[in-house]
Image (tube, rainbow, N blue to C red):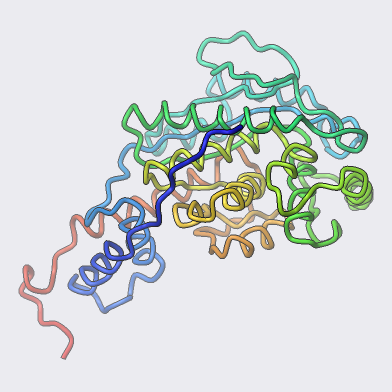
Length: 346
């Protein structure tokens, strides 16, 4: 049995109070648009009049996928481990962006297919990659639950250090195939509607990828009403880790900034397990990966940015974080009509 999460509804009273306060600031009401909506949501999540998100933390979960052996990615499986080394060396895009926003960055090996003996890597491997879900279930149900709990434990440890905004990313060759398969099942849409270019495959490869997903879903028969079953049969270990991290942050009333397609699909799993978790989520950006538009629609969320990105790693979340920070700074530093001696609307 997986442990339960005590996720409470957000405080709409705190959000209403924030909305009322925003209307006293020296600007036309609603003129900051989505930035004001973000401030309201942050107050709902934290319950605070002035939300504090000045200590961001980024978790990047890395894992391999057996489905990669079917040739569904533009890159070989060994790139997962190679990119983990790159993260640890500080040379990836997420390293650059983490430094830019002064975020604590932790890399988690939750299922890389090879051993990586490096200082600074969180070694929490559940297994050496998932199985090829075209031929067998990705993992056992118990492994899926263990991976969720592992993600939750790692997130909790980070939050215990004072992190007050959690950003989530991933690395895993083959994970767009797994995520597309999950989205196909949860949305009840055919693979043709949810498969994109991934790491940069050709149109011919995309068509093949769609066929692989169709066949795998028929063979595995995941139960769309049982999120753990879906995760175990066609999912990935890093998706499970992200799922657990989301649930742990929501339990602690900490805002969660999701990256792109893979992270959003993990968020779908999290919200199928605990629907209250959806209120704690922000979608950092709209991924260029085709299925992302349907994933965010299922979450009933709007992305903060739309930059044509599809990198992963948490990069879209890191780029969106300054917008959340700006929303809190507006509340903290902007004058009211009364304090500034400015006449309000007549």
